[in-house]
Image (cartoon, rainbow, N blue to C red; front, side, top):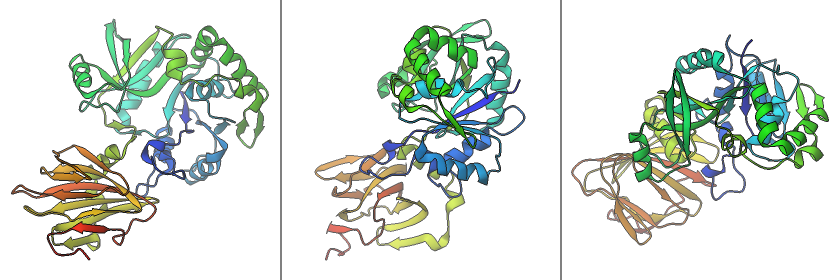
Length: 400
């Protein structure tokens, strides 16, 4: 029996757009010819998987169909949630549709993760299919590349050939994250691998009310052109809970698949800037290099509402003390040790550290050392032009 891929595609990705009511959902942001949702679709192709099922809402239906057509995926199902209830009801309702056989293995993906080395990932899925039961759940752990407070972690204990999960740790502080890594903890990726009957049995046992309401929402759903429109009245009665809090906190029958592969949920502009820093040669164009008295900048890539640049600040040079009316900026230091000013605060930053410049904040970059500074800058806002600069101080005499 083939594995059923389920793509959770109802999230808004609002962490990337803290000051905007109108924003692009993270999974649909165009990063120069690719987006996370398309990568999720491509991930589900191949002989290992059955046709995909996508859990989403009416807001994203048009975009989802567009990318299904683009990638020539003709066989699929879409389950539309009438209201946002988090991943617990989303996963349960999707599992209950007739397209999924009772004992069919299900691989639960989120639409906004970047997973590389898919051959290793798929090999792990195939290897563990025989270990799935009508009660257990496998979660995917990623070996941390560095301590981070942006991800949750878990610890495991070996039992035969299986890694039994012993503890979840939710987004710890950096000092705690370092201790967890020393204890061989893994990042919790938020991807799940289990059978349909395991989902049913766990919800019946631990969340019977949620199971009852979601079952009714599926039984009374309207099915039109490969889309299940869940019954609004029944679905609205389901408790709003993530799968983690609804089930994983209750059951002890959780195993881990631990992987050492490149992975990110791209949940912050800092994480996105790392991807661009790694692949910036792909985006580089000499026509987009602009020289200034303090050095130069390169426009690497722009999308709707954002612009990615690389700044090169010469030794003993300084960008003017300035502010922007219409944009905020996210900086990732990739070389050197700049002195940063934000309003009344001044501080040094090192390689791989990041800085957020809120819209309207007065700021400056100074390079006091004998080596050049490089910064990857992501601008977000309504106007992303050089005309949106108000200078207060400038050693090159550019204050008007």
